[in-house]
Length: 148
Ligand SMILES: [Zn+2]
Ligand SMILES: [Zn+2]
Image (cartoon, rainbow, N blue to C red; front, side, top):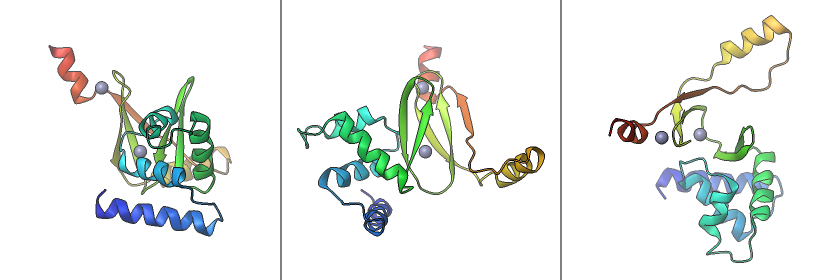
């Protein structure tokens, strides 16, 4: 883990403490994995990565812990129709570019589209809570495969 990742983990743990969520070794490990992995893992990915360390842990336990993190705002759940949800540790505002070939999700930073939210609210009369923007394309690994 880098220094800034260590900082993020410490901050996440103090957020959990403030909200009265108990920090179990499993929760600690799941958080660490989420911060460390830039790959937006599914609950199953996390389970597979940690099952060696916690043989008694089930995918359902991982899900329950992710739900707890989501409720306190540490984690965002990205749903894609029938495919399993991907989980993203909440850092600064960022958007996603997604590969049509392999499904890889990569972060990129861009100022939050607040004006679009305001416009949407103004035009429709909705109270806007959130928005989601995703860019789709072919990642460089898949592009290489296509041309060979
Ligand atoms: Zn790809
Ligand atoms: Zn992300």
